Image (cartoon, rainbow, N blue to C red; front, side, top):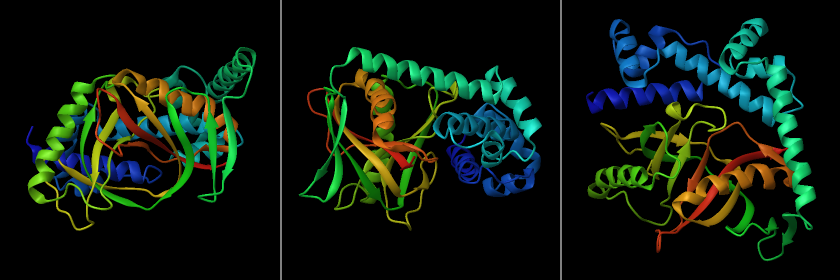
Length: 307
């Protein structure tokens, strides 16, 4: 499929993700993609392997699943509305069809898993794995941990960031060859344009879906570099804005096979002890330096808000 088609459909996916509560129309989505509505459906399906409204419905249900497990104080009706469903019965019926259980049963199952994990942690550890302290040199709160791969944890405020990206959909865990290919494609585009390096330059991977909720064949990620706001993109390279705000930034030193363990630690160990909960925005990895001897220094960045 032509790279220009990929670019237009990626713009549509970004638009949907940013406005998931919005009642979309086919004319509207076709307009974002700059295609005739008579051809848009077929082109979208050819690239995404789902119809536009099946894709929207799945994203809404997966957002609801995320909110059910991350915001236990929100009632189900409020979560349904936040995910873009105006009718609770329609939401419940669709949710059960997607996940095989009702929203309330899904929330209860996640709570039981969380309680079981925390009980096991208390039994198996003689000392807490996460301890907060005040850093006088930076006047910020930080955390000490006994996780061998973790180097530091702190809360940091990021500005909004304009990024150029290449997107991938499908399995990715432990596939360093995949990431190498995606980075090479992005840098080959950015290098001749003088977009690599500089004081505020950042490279990152944005994860659009939760691998504990979304089937691995539908997982989306974007390898990104920060670019000036007026940067023009084309072909497979798209442009989007990564929302700023408060993030937990957990630095690790990892091999390609350690990433899943590091992400799991942030959610299963750090969050329950932190006084924070995940906010409803994509998480990402920042790479402050080049890999050395097969190891990556990486900052796992998850948006947060107080419990």
